[in-house]
Amino acid sequence: MKTVEINPKRLSGDISVPPSKSVSHRAIIAAALSKGKSRIENVIMSKDIEATCKGLESLGSSIQMEAAGEGRVTLTIEGSGMPNVKNGAIDCIESGSTLRFLIPLAALTGEEVTFEGRGKLVERPLDIYYDIFESQGLEYENANGMLPLTLKGTLKAGHFKIRGDVSSQFITGLMFALPLVQGDSTIEIVGKLESVGYIDLTLDVLRKFGIKVENSGYSSFYIKGGQTYIPSDYRVEGDFSQAAFWLVAGTIGSEVNCLDVDKDSLQGDKEIVEIIKAMGGNISISGATMRAIGSSTRGISIDASQIPDIVPIISVMASLSKGTTIISNAARLRIKESDRIKSTVSELAKLGAIIRELEDGIEIEGKDELDGGVVESWNDHRIAMAMAIASIRCKNPVVINGAESVKKSYPGFWNDFRKLGGDINERDMG
Image 1: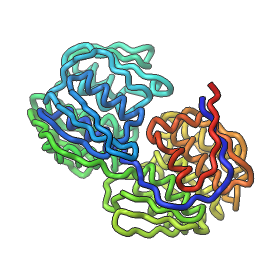
Image 2: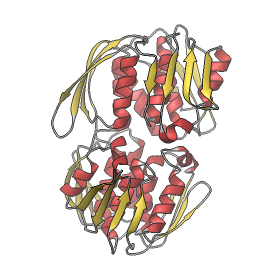
Image 3: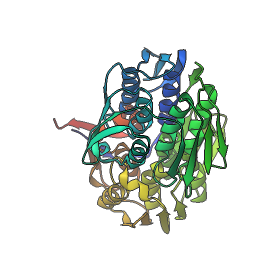
């Protein structure tokens, strides 16, 4: 386990924002489903992306990697057009996207495939897929509702009813697979669709690889069967869920410039810009650069239904803003890498924040500065990174246990933290 000790210091400077993990998953999968060669540029091989690449190789694709500088790589992907099983065991590590995106693809093969995982992923619910398997007669077996999951059978076209408040990952998984089956399908959304931004990303990537999905106001999606993915060269854009950490760092500190972000991005987490502004923060945009300048911020009410991944870092800013912030509609955070409502509240409280757990959210009373102290990452990359940013406005050092968890999405986080002037001591606890 790695432990970092951070001496409080305001950060400033330029940061090249890592490529979007959400877009990377989608582009790599679409390339792997194309018959022919695609190049995917500006990729960081985090543990999650590595899991998706290995899973796709198990399903018949060939993926070559070449270094492209600054920890980025370019992937050359030779797709097979239709998944076929080369290796019947797929280890998703701790990546929910890998698991939920690849299950329907494995179900196109008609062969036996076993999905494995570790950490909290083992418990992440898959009931939506189990219901589909049962209705279509696919065989499956799991460990009392948990991973490993073994499935065998062939996914067929049909009318699929999916709850909108569970996870958009199930919808995306079906959107990847259903264009390849014979016969047309409809995905009907029951209730309000949360995380609309993630569905927009899926539809955009599918379109760029030649797949058409008809969107009826996010209440249903019509997918024609027998379509073909067309190979494409694709550059992954900067990730707003990672930029959020640095934009907050600039807002509660001195000044941080985030490079390689698209103000017109379809990413739902782009909402961080409007949230910071609503709280009184100063953000300016020039081309592909966003600048966050140290500001006095205030508490507001935030609906987190479309932006669950940035709740931990929003909570850090709220804990250092005047007045009360209430974050609501965040119940899905309880089934992430950690229960992110509980972990965010627990660790910010250790740093001296006035913070309270709600059933579906968080209530925070802001103060000028936090105390510092020893916190745990909960093996959750977003908790570790949020606590690092909180250190900027602490009186005393912050010690983060389990700091290696950032490798899940952002392997270069601690280097980038130093690049902006962060004062870190790292210890490997064995």
